[in-house]
Image (cartoon, rainbow, N blue to C red; front, side, top):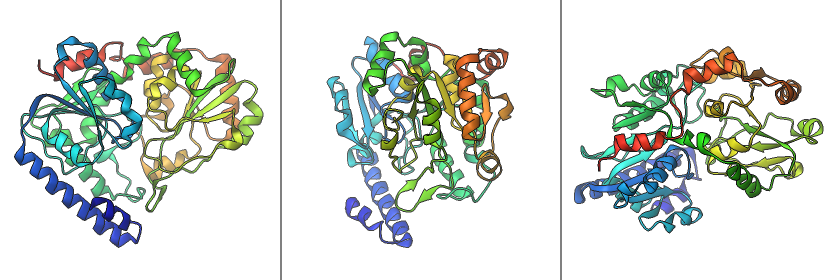
Length: 413
């Protein structure tokens, strides 16, 4: 029934809205039946990352920490994915089950699992019992404004300002815990999700980000493994280019898109002898990218699950307004901020939580400036006082064992 309704969404805007509403009602009813007919299973943990798009981030780190600890050997684990076949390898652990995102099994699992661990918002129709625990790990320290803090209405192609805030409200009211890596992040998440007005007590766990444990624990073997997996050439430096999505770039029946504003032909002429580029699109971005013309120079790693593995093989990070640079800063490597649309993004889309002058890297607006900045980063980079101050403010809680500490806090055994 739901599959049939989804086929109808391609007909017209009005029909799509009606179909989405009907699908929402069907799922809500189905969940309500599971909610009433079942009960919470105390040793069942449900994980999802990026709305079922990946095996990554803090949910992955927390899951693997539980697997390493014999104290949780009696626990059962469920992972929800959009593409289940891709993650069949998780079934090697007999206590782990893989289910389809938004399927009947998915709704049933949420109605039964004692612990929900997600790094992004979960569907609004899912209702939490009093004895269930929802751990919202989120997916990064924010540079750009979120949720209730977004004040620029009209830039988002999908939601009005009021609709955006409602989405954050519906998710936040179910939180038992929300993870944070710093006092700064705690303050912004509390504001963005309106937590003080939703909860009677503080739900923030200011303990560091589990997903960043890997950045303190990786080995040279990990670097070799990832480079071999991607088929990168020997002897060249690696640039990770990870731009974020734009609220106003969207196609009907497709989703958020990204318009490449980078002259890769120019970059290839100037940099190919020394560098390769890993292009990493935000998980919201639905359109595909064809870099066949730049084969051997640009590698599309948008579908590579765990960005941490891309961090450790990269010599330089190039980004714009994505939160990736907060995590990457733990590696104390050079970063460049390619903000070709800075004024438009700041004044019409999101605006920022911090003064961009405090960013620990050079800000550039053209490809020629970007090329020069890459060359300077290669030859002149110093982990200076500004960079150190940045880490002291935003990353001081991260370390090699945050996952274990968080698990002991949130899971009762």
